Image (cartoon, rainbow, N blue to C red; front, side):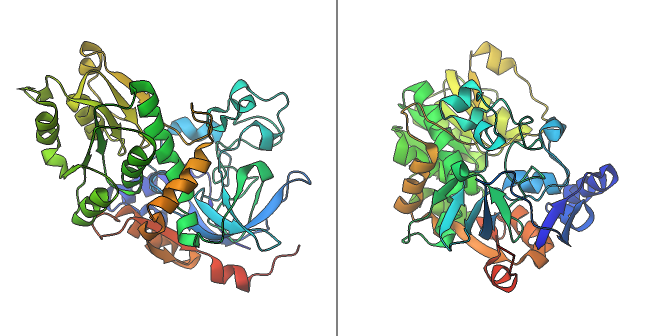
Length: 395
């Protein structure tokens, strides 16, 4: 079968880091990612099933990995060589379509008894990502035993799979997983803050736009302000429920107006009740801390790498800094993925899939995804439907 595989190679990771710093996404051309003919992954046990991806999305963490910019924190909890791709809509051997819930918790790992988080159904907080019957891997797409979505086949445990209703297109279905991440971030901010007041979303890529929609659908902010760099992002943020949409350089002024705060240097005296940072850079986190009110809440939704940050305002203003990773079970008792299906259907989020590429054009696909905002795009995905038809794997 065909698969994009990421090898452990420090020299090639270093080359990817240099190339990616010059042109984001260019690490695919020189780094440890390559398209190969490989044996299909074996099922770890009889209850596992094979999934043939139809569409597989490219997200910011994928680009960071390919460009050699991902944190070394992940090294003990991934296994090599792995096939990336955790945003997946695929089909089973019987032809039915499924969406993958990528987190590899205790149940897929055959850990018994499960950790406390998995026992209550909150798989995103699993404590056993490097144990059990599988090689280390926090998610499908970072574990060599499971394969990933950037291939013509992967294996999954039934607990990871959600049936796709007939009324949802493949494009809508591939947005379920990132929508679940956005719903989790919105509900994390809402549950810790009571849902009221001014909420700010920093960044309007795929995750930022989905977070705007998730706040409107599953939280109750009085006002949503979104910082969006590009015209199409500003238009979409407005369509998805933002009350005020501004360029990043105008964000402080917009928050000051909305909260009637004063300005001292670069810092507001008051500020937003909640800021959800969907970028995860040193600059975006610093801006988030500058525009949140004293005892407000900053939620890191975009994956940060190594950052340089002055934490004085966090200390002085007693700001709560937390993070929103993946999905699982929300405090209202509902599964995040169930809420994500509703979000995708309600806002027709399949329209955010802007372009698709075959695996053979992975370098073009990753460069497009890394430069999506400037090129008027949102979500870029690999389209494996034709490759799946050509490649007949044994049952």
